[in-house]
Image (cartoon, rainbow, N blue to C red; front, side):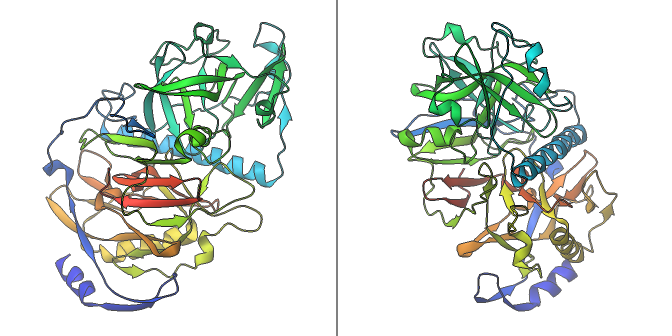
Length: 483
Protein backbone atom coordinates (compact mmCIF):
# COMPACT_ATOMS: atom_id res chain seq x y z
CA UNK A 1 0.00 0.00 0.00
CA UNK A 2 2.81 2.36 0.89
CA UNK A 3 4.49 1.97 -2.53
CA UNK A 4 1.26 2.61 -4.40
CA UNK A 5 0.43 5.55 -2.17
CA UNK A 6 3.93 7.00 -2.70
CA UNK A 7 3.71 6.50 -6.44
CA UNK A 8 0.32 8.11 -6.75
CA UNK A 9 1.20 10.95 -4.41
CA UNK A 10 4.10 11.84 -6.69
CA UNK A 11 1.89 12.03 -9.77
CA UNK A 12 0.90 15.54 -10.74
CA UNK A 13 -2.46 15.52 -12.48
CA UNK A 14 -3.03 18.51 -14.72
CA UNK A 15 -6.69 18.22 -15.66
CA UNK A 16 -9.58 20.19 -17.04
CA UNK A 17 -12.34 20.19 -14.42
CA UNK A 18 -16.09 20.10 -15.04
CA UNK A 19 -16.36 23.54 -13.47
CA UNK A 20 -14.60 25.00 -16.51
CA UNK A 21 -11.35 25.87 -14.79
CA UNK A 22 -7.92 24.23 -15.04
CA UNK A 23 -6.63 22.90 -11.75
CA UNK A 24 -3.46 21.26 -10.53
CA UNK A 25 -4.04 18.36 -8.14
CA UNK A 26 -1.94 15.82 -6.29
CA UNK A 27 -3.33 12.34 -5.68
CA UNK A 28 -4.43 12.03 -2.06
CA UNK A 29 -5.18 9.44 0.61
CA UNK A 30 -6.67 9.53 4.07
CA UNK A 31 -6.59 7.19 7.06
CA UNK A 32 -9.37 4.74 7.78
CA UNK A 33 -9.30 3.62 11.41
CA UNK A 34 -10.53 0.08 11.84
CA UNK A 35 -13.56 -0.03 14.13
CA UNK A 36 -12.26 -2.84 16.32
CA UNK A 37 -9.57 -0.45 17.49
CA UNK A 38 -12.11 2.22 18.50
CA UNK A 39 -13.97 2.63 21.82
CA UNK A 40 -17.17 0.63 21.90
CA UNK A 41 -19.40 3.59 22.68
CA UNK A 42 -19.31 7.23 23.60
CA UNK A 43 -21.83 9.25 25.59
CA UNK A 44 -25.18 9.83 23.94
CA UNK A 45 -27.24 13.01 24.20
CA UNK A 46 -30.75 11.62 24.53
CA UNK A 47 -32.73 14.88 24.53
CA UNK A 48 -35.52 14.83 21.97
CA UNK A 49 -35.55 18.63 21.68
CA UNK A 50 -32.58 20.99 21.97
CA UNK A 51 -32.80 24.47 23.48
CA UNK A 52 -34.72 26.59 20.98
CA UNK A 53 -33.46 29.89 19.62
CA UNK A 54 -35.88 32.56 18.47
CA UNK A 55 -37.01 31.87 14.93
CA UNK A 56 -35.64 28.31 14.99
CA UNK A 57 -36.76 24.80 15.83
CA UNK A 58 -34.24 22.04 16.59
CA UNK A 59 -35.03 18.35 16.96
CA UNK A 60 -32.91 15.32 17.70
CA UNK A 61 -32.58 12.80 14.88
CA UNK A 62 -32.20 9.11 15.70
CA UNK A 63 -31.12 6.33 13.37
CA UNK A 64 -33.18 3.16 13.46
CA UNK A 65 -30.13 1.11 14.45
CA UNK A 66 -28.65 3.50 17.04
CA UNK A 67 -28.01 1.84 20.38
CA UNK A 68 -30.70 3.88 22.18
CA UNK A 69 -33.28 3.54 19.40
CA UNK A 70 -36.54 1.80 20.38
CA UNK A 71 -36.59 0.30 16.86
CA UNK A 72 -33.18 -1.36 17.02
CA UNK A 73 -33.26 -5.15 16.79
CA UNK A 74 -31.37 -5.84 20.00
CA UNK A 75 -29.93 -9.23 19.18
CA UNK A 76 -29.06 -8.51 15.56
CA UNK A 77 -25.48 -8.64 14.34
CA UNK A 78 -23.81 -5.87 12.39
CA UNK A 79 -24.24 -7.95 9.25
CA UNK A 80 -27.96 -8.50 9.85
CA UNK A 81 -28.59 -4.81 10.51
CA UNK A 82 -26.82 -3.81 7.31
CA UNK A 83 -28.67 -6.42 5.24
CA UNK A 84 -31.97 -5.14 6.63
CA UNK A 85 -30.97 -1.60 5.67
CA UNK A 86 -30.06 -2.73 2.15
CA UNK A 87 -33.43 -4.48 1.85
CA UNK A 88 -35.15 -1.21 2.75
CA UNK A 89 -33.01 0.49 0.12
CA UNK A 90 -34.02 -1.94 -2.59
CA UNK A 91 -37.69 -1.39 -1.85
CA UNK A 92 -37.29 2.37 -1.63
CA UNK A 93 -35.37 2.54 -4.90
CA UNK A 94 -38.21 0.76 -6.70
CA UNK A 95 -40.71 3.08 -5.06
CA UNK A 96 -38.84 6.23 -6.06
CA UNK A 97 -38.35 4.99 -9.62
CA UNK A 98 -42.06 4.15 -9.84
CA UNK A 99 -43.01 7.64 -8.66
CA UNK A 100 -40.72 9.30 -11.20
CA UNK A 101 -42.06 7.08 -14.00
CA UNK A 102 -45.66 7.82 -13.04
CA UNK A 103 -44.96 11.55 -13.09
CA UNK A 104 -43.15 11.30 -16.42
CA UNK A 105 -46.06 9.40 -17.92
CA UNK A 106 -48.44 12.19 -17.03
CA UNK A 107 -50.10 10.83 -13.90
CA UNK A 108 -52.94 13.20 -13.01
CA UNK A 109 -54.63 14.09 -9.79
CA UNK A 110 -57.51 11.79 -9.02
CA UNK A 111 -60.47 11.14 -6.77
CA UNK A 112 -61.03 8.50 -4.13
CA UNK A 113 -64.00 6.22 -4.02
CA UNK A 114 -66.07 7.65 -1.18
CA UNK A 115 -66.29 5.41 1.89
CA UNK A 116 -69.68 4.76 3.41
CA UNK A 117 -70.37 7.02 6.37
CA UNK A 118 -68.64 5.82 9.50
CA UNK A 119 -66.51 3.16 7.84
CA UNK A 120 -63.10 2.90 6.17
CA UNK A 121 -63.47 -0.54 4.69
CA UNK A 122 -65.06 -2.15 1.64
CA UNK A 123 -65.62 0.93 -0.51
CA UNK A 124 -61.90 1.70 -0.58
CA UNK A 125 -60.97 -1.67 -2.04
CA UNK A 126 -61.19 -0.52 -5.64
CA UNK A 127 -58.24 1.72 -5.31
CA UNK A 128 -55.85 -0.27 -3.28
CA UNK A 129 -52.76 -1.64 -4.93
CA UNK A 130 -51.30 -5.05 -4.12
CA UNK A 131 -49.90 -4.85 -0.60
CA UNK A 132 -46.33 -6.04 -0.37
CA UNK A 133 -43.47 -4.36 1.47
CA UNK A 134 -43.59 -1.11 3.40
CA UNK A 135 -39.84 -1.19 3.96
CA UNK A 136 -39.37 1.73 1.57
CA UNK A 137 -40.88 4.07 4.12
CA UNK A 138 -42.61 2.85 7.23
CA UNK A 139 -39.61 1.40 8.97
CA UNK A 140 -37.44 4.25 7.60
CA UNK A 141 -33.90 5.22 8.48
CA UNK A 142 -34.07 8.32 10.71
CA UNK A 143 -36.67 9.35 13.27
CA UNK A 144 -37.60 12.34 15.38
CA UNK A 145 -39.85 12.60 18.42
CA UNK A 146 -42.44 15.37 18.16
CA UNK A 147 -45.59 16.46 19.92
CA UNK A 148 -48.89 16.22 18.04
CA UNK A 149 -52.20 17.79 19.05
CA UNK A 150 -53.49 19.77 22.04
CA UNK A 151 -52.64 18.58 24.62
CA UNK A 152 -49.52 17.31 22.84
CA UNK A 153 -48.85 13.59 22.55
CA UNK A 154 -45.26 12.69 21.72
CA UNK A 155 -44.82 10.48 18.66
CA UNK A 156 -41.92 8.93 16.76
CA UNK A 157 -42.03 10.06 13.12
CA UNK A 158 -39.92 8.95 10.15
CA UNK A 159 -38.04 11.91 8.65
CA UNK A 160 -38.15 11.71 4.87
CA UNK A 161 -36.84 14.23 2.33
CA UNK A 162 -38.34 12.05 -0.39
CA UNK A 163 -41.97 12.64 0.66
CA UNK A 164 -44.19 15.68 1.05
CA UNK A 165 -47.34 15.04 3.08
CA UNK A 166 -46.94 14.28 6.78
CA UNK A 167 -49.22 11.55 8.10
CA UNK A 168 -49.98 9.66 11.29
CA UNK A 169 -51.87 6.54 12.17
CA UNK A 170 -55.20 7.54 13.66
CA UNK A 171 -57.78 5.86 15.82
CA UNK A 172 -60.27 4.37 15.06
CA UNK A 173 -58.33 2.00 12.80
CA UNK A 174 -59.48 -0.18 9.96
CA UNK A 175 -55.90 -1.35 9.68
CA UNK A 176 -53.09 -0.01 11.86
CA UNK A 177 -49.66 -1.57 12.17
CA UNK A 178 -47.86 -1.93 15.50
CA UNK A 179 -46.15 1.27 16.67
CA UNK A 180 -44.05 2.28 19.67
CA UNK A 181 -46.49 4.96 20.91
CA UNK A 182 -50.27 4.81 21.49
CA UNK A 183 -52.18 5.49 18.27
CA UNK A 184 -53.15 9.15 17.95
CA UNK A 185 -56.83 9.84 18.66
CA UNK A 186 -57.78 13.08 16.83
CA UNK A 187 -61.07 13.65 18.67
CA UNK A 188 -59.11 14.09 21.91
CA UNK A 189 -57.24 17.09 20.48
CA UNK A 190 -58.78 20.57 20.63
CA UNK A 191 -56.60 21.78 17.71
CA UNK A 192 -57.58 19.05 15.22
CA UNK A 193 -59.69 20.21 12.28
CA UNK A 194 -60.55 18.30 9.13
CA UNK A 195 -60.49 20.22 5.82
CA UNK A 196 -63.73 20.45 3.88
CA UNK A 197 -64.10 18.84 0.46
CA UNK A 198 -64.21 22.11 -1.45
CA UNK A 199 -61.27 23.71 0.32
CA UNK A 200 -58.19 24.85 -1.59
CA UNK A 201 -56.08 22.59 0.64
CA UNK A 202 -58.08 19.53 -0.36
CA UNK A 203 -57.63 20.38 -4.02
CA UNK A 204 -53.83 20.35 -3.60
CA UNK A 205 -53.81 16.62 -2.89
CA UNK A 206 -52.82 14.28 -5.72
CA UNK A 207 -55.67 11.96 -4.75
CA UNK A 208 -58.59 13.11 -2.63
CA UNK A 209 -62.18 12.25 -1.82
CA UNK A 210 -65.08 13.23 0.41
CA UNK A 211 -66.98 11.83 3.34
CA UNK A 212 -69.74 13.95 4.94
CA UNK A 213 -68.13 17.00 3.33
CA UNK A 214 -64.79 16.14 4.96
CA UNK A 215 -61.66 15.85 2.79
CA UNK A 216 -59.99 12.44 2.47
CA UNK A 217 -56.46 11.68 1.31
CA UNK A 218 -54.52 8.72 0.00
CA UNK A 219 -50.76 8.30 -0.29
CA UNK A 220 -49.54 5.23 -2.17
CA UNK A 221 -46.00 3.96 -2.60
CA UNK A 222 -44.50 2.11 -5.53
CA UNK A 223 -44.27 -1.13 -3.57
CA UNK A 224 -48.03 -1.29 -2.97
CA UNK A 225 -48.08 0.18 0.54
CA UNK A 226 -50.56 2.97 1.28
CA UNK A 227 -52.20 5.15 3.90
CA UNK A 228 -55.78 6.48 3.68
CA UNK A 229 -57.75 8.74 5.98
CA UNK A 230 -58.87 12.27 6.80
CA UNK A 231 -56.96 15.30 5.55
CA UNK A 232 -56.79 17.77 8.42
CA UNK A 233 -54.76 20.40 10.24
CA UNK A 234 -53.16 20.02 13.63
CA UNK A 235 -50.60 21.55 16.00
CA UNK A 236 -47.10 20.04 15.91
CA UNK A 237 -44.73 20.90 18.75
CA UNK A 238 -41.21 20.49 20.06
CA UNK A 239 -40.70 21.48 23.67
CA UNK A 240 -42.29 24.90 24.13
CA UNK A 241 -42.33 25.64 20.40
CA UNK A 242 -45.67 25.04 18.69
CA UNK A 243 -46.44 25.19 14.96
CA UNK A 244 -50.18 25.48 14.45
CA UNK A 245 -52.37 24.49 11.51
CA UNK A 246 -50.04 22.01 9.89
CA UNK A 247 -51.82 20.05 7.15
CA UNK A 248 -51.37 16.29 7.53
CA UNK A 249 -53.00 12.97 6.81
CA UNK A 250 -54.83 11.24 9.65
CA UNK A 251 -54.58 7.63 8.48
CA UNK A 252 -57.24 5.14 9.49
CA UNK A 253 -56.12 2.49 6.98
CA UNK A 254 -52.35 2.01 6.77
CA UNK A 255 -51.24 -1.14 5.01
CA UNK A 256 -47.86 -2.62 4.21
CA UNK A 257 -45.04 -3.80 6.45
CA UNK A 258 -44.76 -0.49 8.30
CA UNK A 259 -42.96 -0.86 11.61
CA UNK A 260 -42.46 1.21 14.72
CA UNK A 261 -43.05 4.88 13.96
CA UNK A 262 -46.43 6.58 14.35
CA UNK A 263 -46.13 8.07 10.88
CA UNK A 264 -44.02 10.27 8.69
CA UNK A 265 -42.79 13.87 8.59
CA UNK A 266 -42.41 14.79 4.92
CA UNK A 267 -39.58 17.23 4.17
CA UNK A 268 -39.77 17.17 0.37
CA UNK A 269 -39.88 20.31 -1.76
CA UNK A 270 -43.62 20.14 -2.53
CA UNK A 271 -46.10 22.67 -1.16
CA UNK A 272 -47.63 20.24 1.34
CA UNK A 273 -44.39 19.17 3.01
CA UNK A 274 -43.79 20.18 6.62
CA UNK A 275 -40.75 22.22 5.56
CA UNK A 276 -42.81 24.18 3.04
CA UNK A 277 -45.78 24.71 5.34
CA UNK A 278 -43.75 26.26 8.14
CA UNK A 279 -41.96 28.52 5.65
CA UNK A 280 -44.08 31.54 6.53
CA UNK A 281 -43.21 31.09 10.21
CA UNK A 282 -39.59 29.93 10.17
CA UNK A 283 -38.55 30.41 6.56
CA UNK A 284 -38.46 27.58 4.04
CA UNK A 285 -35.04 26.59 5.31
CA UNK A 286 -33.89 23.54 7.20
CA UNK A 287 -30.76 21.50 7.75
CA UNK A 288 -29.88 18.11 9.14
CA UNK A 289 -26.79 16.24 10.22
CA UNK A 290 -26.90 12.46 10.24
CA UNK A 291 -24.66 10.74 12.77
CA UNK A 292 -24.98 7.90 15.27
CA UNK A 293 -25.82 5.14 12.80
CA UNK A 294 -24.28 2.31 14.80
CA UNK A 295 -23.46 1.49 18.37
CA UNK A 296 -20.31 3.61 18.22
CA UNK A 297 -22.26 6.81 18.64
CA UNK A 298 -20.34 10.08 18.60
CA UNK A 299 -23.14 12.59 19.14
CA UNK A 300 -26.79 13.20 18.44
CA UNK A 301 -28.01 13.98 14.98
CA UNK A 302 -30.10 17.11 14.61
CA UNK A 303 -32.80 18.56 12.39
CA UNK A 304 -32.99 22.37 12.44
CA UNK A 305 -35.62 24.68 10.94
CA UNK A 306 -35.38 28.46 10.60
CA UNK A 307 -32.71 31.03 11.41
CA UNK A 308 -30.16 28.59 12.83
CA UNK A 309 -30.44 26.08 9.98
CA UNK A 310 -27.70 27.53 7.78
CA UNK A 311 -24.19 26.96 9.22
CA UNK A 312 -21.59 29.69 9.06
CA UNK A 313 -19.38 29.63 5.98
CA UNK A 314 -21.75 27.37 4.05
CA UNK A 315 -21.12 27.26 0.29
CA UNK A 316 -24.24 26.82 -1.79
CA UNK A 317 -24.90 25.09 -5.06
CA UNK A 318 -28.26 25.48 -6.83
CA UNK A 319 -30.92 22.80 -6.58
CA UNK A 320 -31.98 21.36 -9.93
CA UNK A 321 -35.66 21.65 -10.82
CA UNK A 322 -37.37 18.61 -12.33
CA UNK A 323 -40.77 19.77 -13.60
CA UNK A 324 -42.12 16.23 -13.60
CA UNK A 325 -41.20 15.48 -9.96
CA UNK A 326 -41.30 18.39 -7.54
CA UNK A 327 -40.92 16.37 -4.32
CA UNK A 328 -37.31 15.21 -4.65
CA UNK A 329 -34.24 17.37 -4.12
CA UNK A 330 -32.10 17.08 -7.26
CA UNK A 331 -28.50 18.26 -6.98
CA UNK A 332 -26.10 19.38 -9.75
CA UNK A 333 -23.39 16.71 -9.45
CA UNK A 334 -20.79 17.45 -12.11
CA UNK A 335 -18.02 14.96 -11.35
CA UNK A 336 -16.28 12.60 -8.93
CA UNK A 337 -12.62 12.39 -7.92
CA UNK A 338 -10.81 9.35 -6.53
CA UNK A 339 -7.49 10.06 -4.84
CA UNK A 340 -7.60 13.60 -6.24
CA UNK A 341 -8.03 12.44 -9.83
CA UNK A 342 -11.14 13.68 -11.62
CA UNK A 343 -12.71 10.65 -13.26
CA UNK A 344 -13.58 10.60 -16.98
CA UNK A 345 -17.35 10.67 -16.48
CA UNK A 346 -19.31 12.96 -18.83
CA UNK A 347 -21.28 15.66 -17.00
CA UNK A 348 -24.36 14.60 -18.99
CA UNK A 349 -24.35 11.31 -17.04
CA UNK A 350 -25.78 13.11 -14.01
CA UNK A 351 -28.28 15.40 -15.74
CA UNK A 352 -32.06 15.12 -15.92
CA UNK A 353 -33.02 14.38 -19.51
CA UNK A 354 -35.79 16.08 -21.47
CA UNK A 355 -38.26 13.40 -20.40
CA UNK A 356 -37.65 14.01 -16.67
CA UNK A 357 -35.67 10.85 -15.92
CA UNK A 358 -32.12 10.55 -14.65
CA UNK A 359 -30.52 13.18 -12.46
CA UNK A 360 -29.11 12.94 -8.93
CA UNK A 361 -31.33 13.02 -5.81
CA UNK A 362 -30.10 13.59 -2.26
CA UNK A 363 -32.19 11.51 0.13
CA UNK A 364 -32.34 10.79 3.87
CA UNK A 365 -34.29 7.56 3.45
CA UNK A 366 -31.81 5.73 1.22
CA UNK A 367 -28.71 4.31 2.91
CA UNK A 368 -26.27 3.50 0.11
CA UNK A 369 -25.44 5.93 -2.70
CA UNK A 370 -26.47 4.53 -6.06
CA UNK A 371 -24.88 5.85 -9.22
CA UNK A 372 -26.07 5.12 -12.71
CA UNK A 373 -24.09 2.07 -13.84
CA UNK A 374 -21.77 3.80 -16.31
CA UNK A 375 -20.58 6.24 -13.64
CA UNK A 376 -20.34 3.62 -10.91
CA UNK A 377 -18.12 1.30 -12.94
CA UNK A 378 -15.62 4.08 -13.66
CA UNK A 379 -15.59 5.07 -9.98
CA UNK A 380 -15.28 1.52 -8.68
CA UNK A 381 -12.47 0.61 -11.06
CA UNK A 382 -10.49 3.70 -10.07
CA UNK A 383 -10.92 2.87 -6.39
CA UNK A 384 -9.84 -0.74 -6.94
CA UNK A 385 -6.76 0.38 -8.84
CA UNK A 386 -5.75 2.63 -5.94
CA UNK A 387 -6.24 -0.10 -3.30
CA UNK A 388 -4.54 -3.07 -4.97
CA UNK A 389 -2.28 -3.74 -1.99
CA UNK A 390 -5.21 -4.22 0.40
CA UNK A 391 -6.30 -7.85 0.89
CA UNK A 392 -9.55 -8.44 -0.96
CA UNK A 393 -12.63 -10.17 0.43
CA UNK A 394 -15.74 -11.71 -1.13
CA UNK A 395 -18.52 -9.35 -2.27
CA UNK A 396 -21.24 -8.59 0.26
CA UNK A 397 -24.82 -8.13 -0.93
CA UNK A 398 -24.81 -5.14 -3.35
CA UNK A 399 -21.17 -4.29 -2.51
CA UNK A 400 -18.79 -5.76 -5.08
CA UNK A 401 -15.53 -4.27 -3.75
CA UNK A 402 -14.59 -5.53 -0.30
CA UNK A 403 -11.46 -5.96 1.80
CA UNK A 404 -10.30 -8.13 4.71
CA UNK A 405 -8.94 -5.62 7.22
CA UNK A 406 -9.18 -7.87 10.26
CA UNK A 407 -5.42 -7.64 10.93
CA UNK A 408 -5.11 -3.91 10.49
CA UNK A 409 -5.42 -1.08 13.00
CA UNK A 410 -5.63 1.51 10.24
CA UNK A 411 -5.14 1.71 6.48
CA UNK A 412 -4.68 4.46 3.90
CA UNK A 413 -7.49 4.75 1.36
CA UNK A 414 -7.85 7.13 -1.59
CA UNK A 415 -10.00 10.19 -0.98
CA UNK A 416 -13.46 10.44 -2.53
CA UNK A 417 -14.75 13.88 -3.54
CA UNK A 418 -18.09 14.80 -5.09
CA UNK A 419 -18.05 17.92 -7.26
CA UNK A 420 -21.10 20.15 -7.69
CA UNK A 421 -21.99 23.20 -9.72
CA UNK A 422 -20.76 26.62 -8.51
CA UNK A 423 -17.41 25.12 -7.50
CA UNK A 424 -18.76 23.28 -4.44
CA UNK A 425 -16.73 20.18 -3.52
CA UNK A 426 -17.71 17.63 -0.89
CA UNK A 427 -14.84 15.51 0.43
CA UNK A 428 -16.17 12.43 2.19
CA UNK A 429 -14.71 11.06 5.44
CA UNK A 430 -13.22 7.60 4.97
CA UNK A 431 -15.96 6.02 7.11
CA UNK A 432 -18.59 7.37 4.70
CA UNK A 433 -17.41 5.10 1.89
CA UNK A 434 -15.54 2.26 3.61
CA UNK A 435 -18.15 0.49 5.71
CA UNK A 436 -17.64 -2.46 8.05
CA UNK A 437 -20.14 -5.14 7.02
CA UNK A 438 -19.53 -7.83 9.64
CA UNK A 439 -17.70 -8.52 12.87
CA UNK A 440 -14.94 -10.41 11.04
CA UNK A 441 -13.28 -7.19 9.89
CA UNK A 442 -14.63 -7.06 6.34
CA UNK A 443 -14.98 -3.56 4.89
CA UNK A 444 -16.66 -2.68 1.60
CA UNK A 445 -16.69 0.29 -0.76
CA UNK A 446 -20.16 1.61 0.07
CA UNK A 447 -21.41 2.63 -3.35
CA UNK A 448 -23.50 0.62 -5.79
CA UNK A 449 -24.64 0.81 -9.38
CA UNK A 450 -28.17 1.41 -10.59
CA UNK A 451 -29.41 0.30 -14.01
CA UNK A 452 -32.47 2.57 -13.79
CA UNK A 453 -30.62 5.76 -14.79
CA UNK A 454 -31.40 7.54 -11.52
CA UNK A 455 -28.59 8.35 -9.06
CA UNK A 456 -29.23 8.84 -5.32
CA UNK A 457 -26.86 10.19 -2.68
CA UNK A 458 -27.69 8.12 0.39
CA UNK A 459 -27.40 8.77 4.11
CA UNK A 460 -24.22 6.74 4.69
CA UNK A 461 -22.35 9.19 2.48
CA UNK A 462 -24.05 12.15 4.22
CA UNK A 463 -23.11 11.17 7.78
CA UNK A 464 -21.26 13.77 9.80
CA UNK A 465 -22.01 16.47 7.20
CA UNK A 466 -24.60 19.19 7.75
CA UNK A 467 -26.87 19.39 4.72
CA UNK A 468 -28.71 22.72 4.51
CA UNK A 469 -31.62 23.23 2.14
CA UNK A 470 -32.71 26.78 1.41
CA UNK A 471 -36.05 26.26 -0.29
CA UNK A 472 -36.71 29.98 -0.56
CA UNK A 473 -33.69 30.44 -2.84
CA UNK A 474 -33.64 26.92 -4.31
CA UNK A 475 -30.14 26.01 -3.19
CA UNK A 476 -28.32 23.47 -1.04
CA UNK A 477 -25.11 23.57 1.01
CA UNK A 478 -22.82 20.96 2.54
CA UNK A 479 -20.85 21.85 5.67
CA UNK A 480 -18.29 19.42 7.02
CA UNK A 481 -17.75 19.21 10.80
CA UNK A 482 -20.84 21.35 11.51
CA UNK A 483 -22.89 18.82 13.45
